[in-house]
Amino acid sequence: MTFHYITRIIQKQREFFAGGATRDISFRKKQLILLEKAILKNERAIMDALHEDLRKPEFESYAAEIGILYPEIRTAVKNIFSWARTRKVSTPVLHFLSSSYVYQEPYGVALIIGPWNYPFQLTIAPLIAAMAAGNCAVLKPSELSPATSHVIARIISENFDPSYIAVFEGGVEETKTLLQEKFDYIFFTGGTAVGKIIMNAAAQNLTPVTLELGGKSPTIVHRDAHLEYAAKRIAWGKFFNAGQTCLAPDYLLVHQEVKNKFIEIFKKTITTFYGEDPSKSRDYARIINDRHFARVCALMKGGNIIHGGGTDPVERYIAPTVIDNVSLEDAIMKEEIFGPLMPVLAYDDIAQPLSIINSMPRPLALYLFTKSRKIEKHVLERAHFGGGCINDTVSHVGSTTLPFGGIGDSGMGRYHGKAGFDTFSHQRSILKRSNLVDMKLRYPPYGNRVKLLQKLFKFIG
Ligand code: NAD
Image: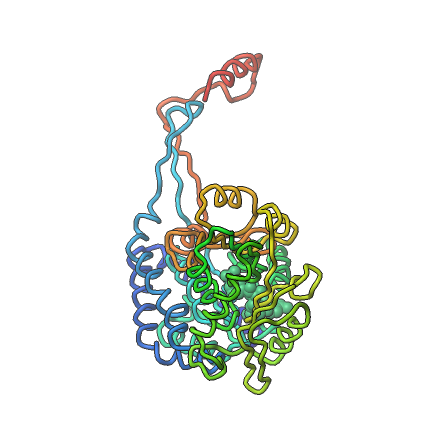
């Protein structure tokens, strides 16, 4: 991938965009339906690639990488017309004899950079939003999941003209080359450190960005929680994709009164899910590469392992592991785990988890297990985080009606459903003035009209 080649493709996309084809709503719908058909046709190839990259179980591949995209496409196809409609809004009395409109303008050429953990979904879902809003797009899937990256490149090149949608494969160097180009929008999903590099590069061209980043998402189990359900829902969210989920429950804060009971149920749940030896389970994924395997293994050093702990470097297998007696000073509490380790901390008073959560960078998600409306309100009002669930984990990401995104270190901007359309659209405001009369008031020479102006501004709404 040479700089010259990239520049040529982007130039072609600019020309295609300027030609106006993407402004046509029926064109957008047709292209989205084409994308849906292409995904449907390639489901087997996508699942095979995900298995090759992550040994992802078929169920998880279908649920979180493929199936989740269909409602996104269908919601967009069903609603683009109304989302894209120019809205007439009211006009303040100051501008009487005028009318006001908000147009939904596509930005132009968008760059979408994807991560390796859900390498298909997290590259294609932003593309759906970009297409719905009428943009051209350049995709850069993650080089750490090469099989999926190749499948994305093949599906897109077989179905779309590169002057509308193009894929550039490659790693850090290729991404840096891409970032030298001026895009109209950059949508990045990945880690916080790289997010800063992306934002810095975007700043050179004043390109707007969405950053979907990660973080340590806390999970609180209060003393009145339904412990059986909590154990299942937390174990599912944590060990799905072997913990390599941006919004996985990162660590547990359990009320002291129910801690021992909860841990017993949690351990039993893990065994029910993955058997006595999870390395033999077909439903349990592997760690993406040796570097991440070594990084996650090193995090096991603090605290006491009370469940799991087994590893196999050849397969990059790490067992679902529960670690008790963890301190906030341990390495595991200092970085996003992004692996199947669950540290457990206890609390007596709800103020303690809140103070821990708010002392750390703002996480992508928070999960709270309680039956108390009062506790729910208390936590939601005081903790700062991107989004989350009450009495569940991770599920909010799968809704087309909930805007998904982080805050602070976990990112900026949001997508899914209409929120994705809005992200990839510039809201252009137009005031249309009547030619019936032309008020002299605003034109020089102003004379002593300032007094009139003072009176006017005191009364208008
Ligand atoms: P990453 O930040 O290492 O890489 C993401 C992308 O950036 C890749 O395409 C990669 O090629 C590119 N990249 C890496 N280094 C770069 C550099 N120096 N300059 C330019 N581009 C560079 O992220 P990852 O390891 O693929 O994914 C894991 C992280 O992503 C975790 O922190 C996770 O929480 C986060 N994540 C967030 C979401 C979300 O929706 N908020 C989803 C998935 C993952």
